[in-house]
Each structure stands twice: as structure tokens, then as C-alpha cells.
Image 1 (cartoon, rainbow, N blue to C red):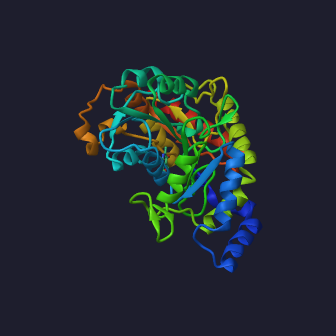
Image 2 (image 1 turned 90 degrees about the vertical axis):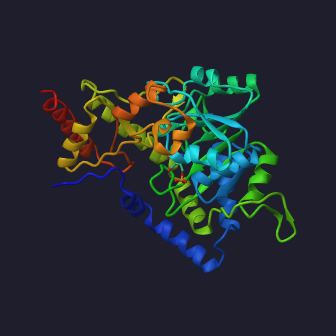
Image 3 (image 1 turned 30 degrees about the vertical axis):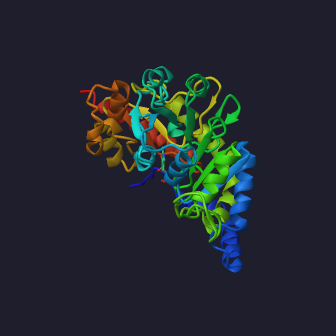
Length: 372
Ligand SMILES: Cc1ncc(COP(=O)(O)O)c(C=O)c1O
């Protein structure tokens, strides 16, 4: 039986093998493995692409958020408003800084933070809004930036799933105070290990983040601004990312084409399809449908060799680790409903039209067979 994976990283490697192999060899021959010219050049290119003044390469997307919050001075006693419908790395970074996670519910159509719900959660202790551009669709940034301005809050963008996504012509990550990216291999811009990036217009934040990633050192062995971290993007990953960055627009465009085809073929199916809001450019890191028949549909697809995944089956306010936050079922109904219904179908730039047609047939068949 034919198997269709959720993502196919080997197919992508083969499409750019010669360039990747040459980039890796260049680093091996250089003898420079940590930071150095490869990282500096990638940071320059990333800034140019994203339209931000400063870029700081770090060890992962999780660390990007952690160091960003640290560089913004967020810590004990502060509250950070964010979404319960995200990967735990988002909230882990807040808690690692000793700040309190305050959740606000999401919008039903994009699964991103609802600005009206954010506003209700603001207290005297609120310091920042941590926005996630989930699945590659930008959050409602105009309204969020306006709220932040009114209440004098920082905005951190978790762009782990959205490299190249745009909101009113601006790349996500360049809109709030700081943008945080992940280059985990399965991300739409992924390296071959762990990697992350912080972007900002604020020189002070960039300089702090630069020091924090090397043990807090402003000047090696001489001057330290704080207890820092050991969190650098390494030269091999930067060299790989330099190659991949050249292709990101083409790959994102292919994702968008695949999404359109899925939308067209699933148009009449009794499921919720992803939306693209006006002014937004969705890059479909994940192609997500929603159905109350999710469990049965997922098993049906599995039987037919189609891999799918649920991002995320439990909204974070209900995980046992966060019991201390005193949230309960019913607090964020839209996030809870989404967690019960979402299902990510295979999505990668090399996914063939034939495979998409097959997947859609099986989805429709599965929904028909589960309706009686
Ligand atoms: C929304 C979100 N935030 C943060 C992260 C963390 O990134 P990383 O795995 O590079 O630490 C991820 C990816 O796993 C993510 O999907």
C-alpha cells in the first residue's frame, strides 16, 4: 500500500542536494562551527528578507522566545497574555522567565488569538502579549498592536510556524516588538537540527539577546550583562539555512497552491476548511481541517496509508502541568472545540497533485462511511 507522509524532508533535500552538500562541506573545511561568518551572513539575509533591522540566531524556537522575553525585561510578577491553542514551547518560555501565563480564547476561523478576549485579560501586571501565528496564518495584528499601544504592552510574535507569512504586506515577526522563529526540521523553513532566530527593530533588545545567547557576555571573559544562556545557531545550520532561504518564497507558493487544490476538492465535504483572511498571506505550514468526526476520520486515513496529526489535542489551560493556573473546562470554549476537531493533512512543497486528489477522495469516503 502506498504511504503518504505528513511531511517529506528527504524529497526536499534531494531537490537541493548539491547546494546543501557544498554548504556543509564549506563549513567543515572552515573549521568554524559556532557563530562566525556563516551565522552573521544568515542573520543579514534573514533581516533583509523579513524587513527587520536586527536578527540574532539562537539554538531553537523555544530559546528565541525565552531570550526575547528576557531581553524585554519580562520576569517574576509579570503577566503575559497568550493563546491556549499552541505548542507548549510558547508558554514554557513565559514560565521559565518566572512570569505568569494568562490565556485568552481564540477566533474560530483562524485559530489565532481573539483581540477582544485579549483586552478582557489585561491587568496592572500585564507586560506583554505573546501572539502565535498558528499553522502559518497571521494573527489579527492591527487590533493586537492597537491594544498593546493603548495599554503600553510589548508584543512578541511566535512565528515558529510562519516564516514568510504576511500581514498587510509586512512579514510576520516584523510587526511586534520582537519576532521569534524556529528552524526545527519540519518547519516551513527548517534546518537539519535545531535552530531559531530573534528579530527586532530595537537595538537594545538585539544587543541584549546577542549577549544572552553567549552566557550573558557583552565582551568575552570581561563583561557580563546578566546570567545568560548557551544558545547559539551553529554554523552548519546557518549554512544550510542560507541555501534554503533562497527557495522559501517558491516553497511557500507551492504550499499555497496545494492548499487551493485541497480547498477546491474538499469544497463540498462536511468539514471546516482553512481560511485566509483579507490582507493576510497564509503559508500553510499545516493544512488543517476540522470535523467532529476527527478520531474516526484519522483512523480511516491511517488505514489507507495517509499520515495526519492533531496540533493540538489538549488546549494548554487543561494540561495537568498547568493545574496550578486554576483554569477549568469551559474557560476557553473555542480553543476547546478546536482541540477536539482539528486535523492536519499532509502538506509539503513536493506533495504531488495525484496524492492530494487521493487524500481528498479518502477524506470524503471516510466522512461518508462514518455518517451511519
Ligand atoms: C508555535 C510554536 N512555538 C514554538 C516552537 C518551538 O520551536 P523549537 O522546536 O524550535 O524550539 C514551535 C515548534 O516546535 C511551535 O510550533
